[in-house]
Image 1 (cartoon, one colour):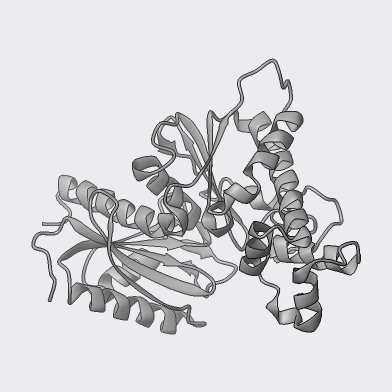
Image 2 (image 1 turned 180 degrees about the horizontal axis):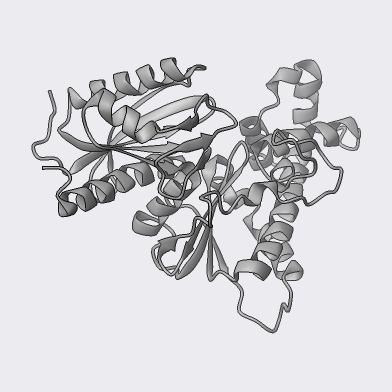
Length: 330
């Protein structure tokens, strides 16, 4: 058993719609151990899964608390998960229930806010003042840091930037609306754009198009990224389109929040080298008063897809310290 003494280690768990990742994280943000599994479909199965993952990690490490990064709407105090489009929890006191179940403090956080916490303490947002962390993956999640604090809005759901309407009556979105920003700027959008480009038959020399014609199921976000990196014309065009939509969206957001730093996180954000230059150009052209104001720096993530678990672990560490200070735990 490779167990550490003390309780300075915490577990961060990133609970996504398709997979659950649990990591032991030290106070410097370093991941020491990782477990990963598919996301169960029911509440009972999911909570049993979390219990099992924490139990396996506790067998190997001395852990002080657990943090959960959850894709969904949480109350401002994070005591309730109101709703999640991909998980079974609704109006559920998840942190309290899981704390009782596993016998240690558990703290919940919105997954994009968890990524923002990680980038603030250990990554690309460390020197920002007012910072937007944009997690671009299957969809778009956003964490907004104002004067060093996470901004949650009046009811705990801010900022839902991925569901700003950018194309009236555009592509349908799982939220029930049409034309949401994440339907044009995300991993899912990247595949949809590639499909449209292939259907246009404007790229007869594209290997990606040939592969897709032979096996439509082979067209994934990762495959489009690999094709773009190899210079495939469909892949390059799909990422150029993503960069355009990213820049236009960031221009709108800058007009509202005026951040000094924007960090691109998430699975797509981690591949920002494929589109970041294009996005910066479109952002500069789209923002109001360009040429007469300071613009936000735009940086790629330093933590990649691990930001959610690292941030969840840090939320747990901060929560544990606060409860100890208040005398709620020994």
